[in-house]
Length: 289
Image 1 (cartoon, helix red, strand yellow):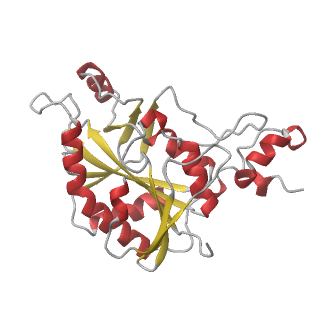
Image 2 (image 1 turned 90 degrees about the vertical axis):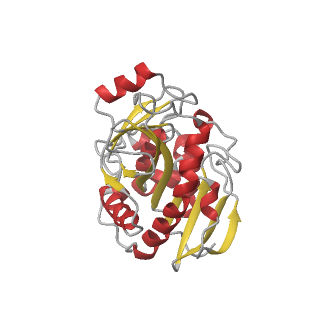
Image 3 (image 1 turned 60 degrees about the vertical axis):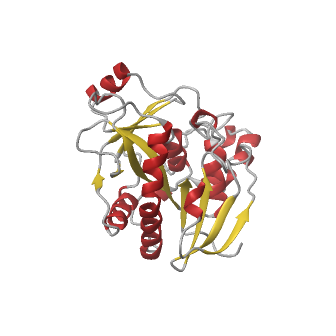
Protein backbone atom coordinates (compact mmCIF):
# COMPACT_ATOMS: atom_id res chain seq x y z
CA UNK A 1 0.00 0.00 0.00
CA UNK A 2 1.74 3.17 -1.23
CA UNK A 3 -0.33 5.91 0.40
CA UNK A 4 -0.65 5.98 4.19
CA UNK A 5 -4.14 6.49 5.66
CA UNK A 6 -4.67 9.99 7.00
CA UNK A 7 -7.25 8.73 9.49
CA UNK A 8 -8.03 5.52 11.35
CA UNK A 9 -11.53 4.71 12.63
CA UNK A 10 -12.13 2.09 15.32
CA UNK A 11 -15.76 1.09 15.81
CA UNK A 12 -18.43 -1.21 14.46
CA UNK A 13 -18.20 -2.95 11.11
CA UNK A 14 -21.38 -1.12 10.00
CA UNK A 15 -19.25 1.96 9.38
CA UNK A 16 -17.68 0.33 6.32
CA UNK A 17 -20.95 0.53 4.39
CA UNK A 18 -20.92 4.25 3.81
CA UNK A 19 -21.58 6.39 0.78
CA UNK A 20 -18.45 7.78 -0.79
CA UNK A 21 -16.09 5.05 0.43
CA UNK A 22 -14.32 3.56 -2.56
CA UNK A 23 -11.38 1.35 -3.55
CA UNK A 24 -11.78 -0.68 -0.35
CA UNK A 25 -9.27 -3.43 0.36
CA UNK A 26 -8.91 -5.80 3.29
CA UNK A 27 -5.45 -5.64 4.86
CA UNK A 28 -4.13 -8.34 7.20
CA UNK A 29 -1.61 -6.91 9.67
CA UNK A 30 0.68 -8.94 11.93
CA UNK A 31 1.98 -7.38 15.15
CA UNK A 32 4.34 -8.42 17.97
CA UNK A 33 1.23 -8.46 20.19
CA UNK A 34 -0.81 -10.85 18.08
CA UNK A 35 -3.55 -10.30 15.54
CA UNK A 36 -5.88 -7.29 15.63
CA UNK A 37 -9.60 -7.81 16.12
CA UNK A 38 -10.20 -8.05 12.36
CA UNK A 39 -8.52 -7.25 9.06
CA UNK A 40 -8.24 -3.49 8.52
CA UNK A 41 -10.44 -2.15 5.76
CA UNK A 42 -8.58 0.56 3.85
CA UNK A 43 -10.30 2.76 1.30
CA UNK A 44 -10.68 6.27 -0.09
CA UNK A 45 -13.13 8.70 1.50
CA UNK A 46 -13.52 12.37 0.53
CA UNK A 47 -10.36 11.99 -1.51
CA UNK A 48 -8.34 10.77 1.47
CA UNK A 49 -7.07 7.31 2.41
CA UNK A 50 -8.71 6.00 5.61
CA UNK A 51 -8.52 2.75 7.60
CA UNK A 52 -11.40 1.09 9.48
CA UNK A 53 -11.11 -1.55 12.19
CA UNK A 54 -13.96 -3.48 13.83
CA UNK A 55 -13.00 -3.33 17.51
CA UNK A 56 -15.08 -6.36 18.50
CA UNK A 57 -14.38 -8.32 15.33
CA UNK A 58 -16.67 -8.87 12.35
CA UNK A 59 -20.06 -9.79 13.79
CA UNK A 60 -19.14 -8.45 17.27
CA UNK A 61 -17.81 -11.68 18.79
CA UNK A 62 -15.06 -10.23 21.02
CA UNK A 63 -15.95 -9.07 24.55
CA UNK A 64 -14.61 -5.66 25.72
CA UNK A 65 -12.15 -7.38 28.08
CA UNK A 66 -10.98 -9.74 25.33
CA UNK A 67 -10.17 -7.09 22.72
CA UNK A 68 -6.48 -7.12 21.80
CA UNK A 69 -6.11 -3.37 22.19
CA UNK A 70 -2.34 -3.45 21.80
CA UNK A 71 -2.53 -5.31 18.49
CA UNK A 72 -5.27 -2.97 17.24
CA UNK A 73 -3.32 0.22 17.93
CA UNK A 74 -0.02 -1.28 16.77
CA UNK A 75 -1.66 -2.35 13.49
CA UNK A 76 -2.88 1.20 12.91
CA UNK A 77 0.62 2.51 13.61
CA UNK A 78 2.13 -0.04 11.25
CA UNK A 79 -0.14 1.20 8.46
CA UNK A 80 1.09 4.74 9.08
CA UNK A 81 -2.08 6.05 10.72
CA UNK A 82 -1.36 9.20 12.73
CA UNK A 83 -4.92 10.05 13.86
CA UNK A 84 -7.59 7.72 15.27
CA UNK A 85 -11.28 8.33 15.88
CA UNK A 86 -12.95 5.91 18.29
CA UNK A 87 -16.67 5.45 17.73
CA UNK A 88 -18.36 3.79 20.68
CA UNK A 89 -21.55 3.43 22.67
CA UNK A 90 -21.79 4.89 26.15
CA UNK A 91 -24.29 5.36 28.94
CA UNK A 92 -25.11 8.84 30.22
CA UNK A 93 -24.47 9.81 33.83
CA UNK A 94 -25.89 13.32 33.38
CA UNK A 95 -29.42 14.50 32.68
CA UNK A 96 -28.35 16.81 29.84
CA UNK A 97 -26.59 14.03 27.91
CA UNK A 98 -29.68 12.37 26.50
CA UNK A 99 -29.95 9.13 24.52
CA UNK A 100 -29.28 9.84 20.86
CA UNK A 101 -26.85 12.65 21.65
CA UNK A 102 -23.14 12.51 20.82
CA UNK A 103 -20.35 13.52 23.22
CA UNK A 104 -16.71 14.32 22.50
CA UNK A 105 -15.15 13.61 25.93
CA UNK A 106 -12.01 15.35 27.10
CA UNK A 107 -11.13 13.12 30.07
CA UNK A 108 -10.91 9.40 30.81
CA UNK A 109 -11.12 7.45 34.07
CA UNK A 110 -9.83 3.89 33.82
CA UNK A 111 -11.78 1.59 36.16
CA UNK A 112 -10.75 -1.64 34.43
CA UNK A 113 -8.53 -4.31 35.99
CA UNK A 114 -7.94 -7.17 33.52
CA UNK A 115 -6.38 -5.47 30.49
CA UNK A 116 -2.88 -4.97 29.15
CA UNK A 117 -2.48 -1.22 29.50
CA UNK A 118 0.93 -0.55 27.94
CA UNK A 119 3.25 -1.54 25.12
CA UNK A 120 6.18 -1.13 27.49
CA UNK A 121 7.81 -3.56 29.88
CA UNK A 122 10.03 -6.59 29.37
CA UNK A 123 13.23 -4.58 29.38
CA UNK A 124 12.12 -1.13 28.23
CA UNK A 125 10.32 1.25 30.59
CA UNK A 126 8.43 4.40 29.59
CA UNK A 127 6.21 6.74 31.57
CA UNK A 128 4.05 8.63 29.10
CA UNK A 129 2.10 11.74 30.09
CA UNK A 130 -1.69 11.30 29.92
CA UNK A 131 -2.88 14.27 31.95
CA UNK A 132 -4.96 15.21 28.92
CA UNK A 133 -5.49 11.78 27.37
CA UNK A 134 -7.33 12.73 24.18
CA UNK A 135 -5.91 14.99 21.48
CA UNK A 136 -7.45 18.47 21.92
CA UNK A 137 -6.86 19.45 18.28
CA UNK A 138 -8.39 16.30 16.81
CA UNK A 139 -11.28 16.54 19.28
CA UNK A 140 -11.97 20.10 18.13
CA UNK A 141 -11.95 18.98 14.50
CA UNK A 142 -14.22 16.04 15.32
CA UNK A 143 -16.65 18.30 17.18
CA UNK A 144 -16.92 20.56 14.13
CA UNK A 145 -17.46 17.55 11.87
CA UNK A 146 -20.30 16.23 14.04
CA UNK A 147 -21.84 19.72 14.29
CA UNK A 148 -21.89 19.88 10.50
CA UNK A 149 -24.33 16.93 10.47
CA UNK A 150 -26.87 18.80 12.62
CA UNK A 151 -26.74 16.16 15.37
CA UNK A 152 -26.98 17.08 19.05
CA UNK A 153 -23.37 17.06 20.24
CA UNK A 154 -21.65 18.03 23.49
CA UNK A 155 -18.03 19.01 24.03
CA UNK A 156 -16.13 17.71 27.05
CA UNK A 157 -16.88 15.49 30.02
CA UNK A 158 -15.19 12.56 31.73
CA UNK A 159 -15.77 9.04 30.40
CA UNK A 160 -15.25 6.19 32.85
CA UNK A 161 -14.31 2.79 31.42
CA UNK A 162 -15.64 -0.22 33.34
CA UNK A 163 -14.51 -3.79 32.83
CA UNK A 164 -17.82 -5.19 31.69
CA UNK A 165 -19.24 -7.09 30.00
CA UNK A 166 -22.14 -6.65 32.42
CA UNK A 167 -23.84 -3.29 32.86
CA UNK A 168 -23.53 -1.38 36.15
CA UNK A 169 -25.59 -1.82 39.29
CA UNK A 170 -27.58 1.21 40.45
CA UNK A 171 -25.15 1.64 43.36
CA UNK A 172 -22.15 1.68 41.01
CA UNK A 173 -23.85 4.08 38.63
CA UNK A 174 -24.62 6.51 41.44
CA UNK A 175 -21.04 6.30 42.76
CA UNK A 176 -19.69 7.15 39.30
CA UNK A 177 -22.05 10.13 39.18
CA UNK A 178 -20.82 11.29 42.58
CA UNK A 179 -17.26 11.17 41.22
CA UNK A 180 -18.20 13.65 38.52
CA UNK A 181 -18.20 11.21 35.61
CA UNK A 182 -20.32 12.23 32.62
CA UNK A 183 -20.43 8.97 30.64
CA UNK A 184 -19.74 5.28 31.11
CA UNK A 185 -18.38 2.81 28.57
CA UNK A 186 -16.30 -0.35 28.21
CA UNK A 187 -13.65 0.29 25.54
CA UNK A 188 -11.93 3.69 25.88
CA UNK A 189 -9.31 2.23 28.23
CA UNK A 190 -6.63 1.20 27.49
CA UNK A 191 -7.16 2.15 23.83
CA UNK A 192 -6.67 5.87 24.45
CA UNK A 193 -3.46 5.32 26.44
CA UNK A 194 -1.97 2.94 23.90
CA UNK A 195 -2.63 5.49 21.18
CA UNK A 196 -0.67 8.06 23.20
CA UNK A 197 2.22 5.59 23.62
CA UNK A 198 2.13 5.05 19.86
CA UNK A 199 2.21 8.84 19.37
CA UNK A 200 -1.12 8.76 17.54
CA UNK A 201 -3.72 11.52 17.97
CA UNK A 202 -6.89 10.02 19.44
CA UNK A 203 -10.41 11.33 19.95
CA UNK A 204 -13.74 9.72 20.81
CA UNK A 205 -17.17 10.08 19.23
CA UNK A 206 -19.29 8.68 22.07
CA UNK A 207 -22.88 7.85 21.18
CA UNK A 208 -25.21 8.07 24.17
CA UNK A 209 -27.45 5.01 24.05
CA UNK A 210 -29.12 5.19 27.48
CA UNK A 211 -29.16 6.82 30.93
CA UNK A 212 -27.34 3.87 32.50
CA UNK A 213 -29.37 2.72 35.56
CA UNK A 214 -29.18 5.73 37.89
CA UNK A 215 -32.14 7.38 36.13
CA UNK A 216 -35.11 5.82 37.94
CA UNK A 217 -37.67 7.21 35.47
CA UNK A 218 -36.01 5.31 32.62
CA UNK A 219 -35.93 1.55 32.00
CA UNK A 220 -32.63 -0.19 32.82
CA UNK A 221 -30.23 -0.41 29.89
CA UNK A 222 -30.53 -3.44 27.60
CA UNK A 223 -28.60 -4.68 24.56
CA UNK A 224 -31.66 -4.01 22.39
CA UNK A 225 -31.73 -0.39 23.59
CA UNK A 226 -28.03 0.08 22.80
CA UNK A 227 -28.30 -1.44 19.32
CA UNK A 228 -31.40 0.58 18.43
CA UNK A 229 -29.72 3.89 19.26
CA UNK A 230 -26.45 2.94 17.60
CA UNK A 231 -28.21 2.01 14.37
CA UNK A 232 -30.04 5.33 14.40
CA UNK A 233 -26.74 7.17 14.84
CA UNK A 234 -24.75 5.20 12.24
CA UNK A 235 -25.62 7.67 9.48
CA UNK A 236 -24.47 10.58 11.66
CA UNK A 237 -21.19 8.82 12.39
CA UNK A 238 -20.63 8.13 8.70
CA UNK A 239 -21.36 11.72 7.71
CA UNK A 240 -19.09 13.09 10.43
CA UNK A 241 -16.20 10.79 9.50
CA UNK A 242 -16.48 11.80 5.85
CA UNK A 243 -16.59 15.50 6.77
CA UNK A 244 -13.58 15.10 9.07
CA UNK A 245 -11.51 13.15 6.55
CA UNK A 246 -12.13 15.74 3.86
CA UNK A 247 -10.94 18.64 6.00
CA UNK A 248 -8.00 17.19 7.96
CA UNK A 249 -4.88 19.28 7.36
CA UNK A 250 -1.50 17.69 6.79
CA UNK A 251 0.00 19.37 9.87
CA UNK A 252 -1.50 18.30 13.19
CA UNK A 253 -0.95 21.29 15.49
CA UNK A 254 -0.52 19.17 18.63
CA UNK A 255 2.23 17.39 20.57
CA UNK A 256 0.90 13.81 20.31
CA UNK A 257 3.55 12.77 17.78
CA UNK A 258 6.28 13.58 20.33
CA UNK A 259 4.66 11.87 23.34
CA UNK A 260 7.63 9.55 23.93
CA UNK A 261 10.31 12.22 23.58
CA UNK A 262 10.67 12.58 27.36
CA UNK A 263 8.99 9.32 28.40
CA UNK A 264 11.71 6.68 27.92
CA UNK A 265 13.56 6.11 31.19
CA UNK A 266 15.61 2.97 30.53
CA UNK A 267 19.25 3.73 29.68
CA UNK A 268 19.79 2.78 26.02
CA UNK A 269 22.68 0.47 26.89
CA UNK A 270 20.42 -1.46 29.27
CA UNK A 271 17.47 -1.97 26.94
CA UNK A 272 16.93 -5.66 26.35
CA UNK A 273 17.57 -6.50 22.66
CA UNK A 274 14.23 -8.31 22.42
CA UNK A 275 12.39 -5.25 23.74
CA UNK A 276 14.28 -2.95 21.40
CA UNK A 277 13.32 -5.10 18.42
CA UNK A 278 9.71 -5.55 19.53
CA UNK A 279 9.11 -1.84 20.04
CA UNK A 280 11.27 -0.45 17.26
CA UNK A 281 8.23 0.88 15.39
CA UNK A 282 7.38 3.02 18.43
CA UNK A 283 10.78 4.03 19.82
CA UNK A 284 13.30 3.47 17.03
CA UNK A 285 13.58 7.16 16.19
CA UNK A 286 14.61 7.92 19.77
CA UNK A 287 17.24 5.17 20.03
CA UNK A 288 19.30 5.89 16.95
CA UNK A 289 23.04 6.33 17.71
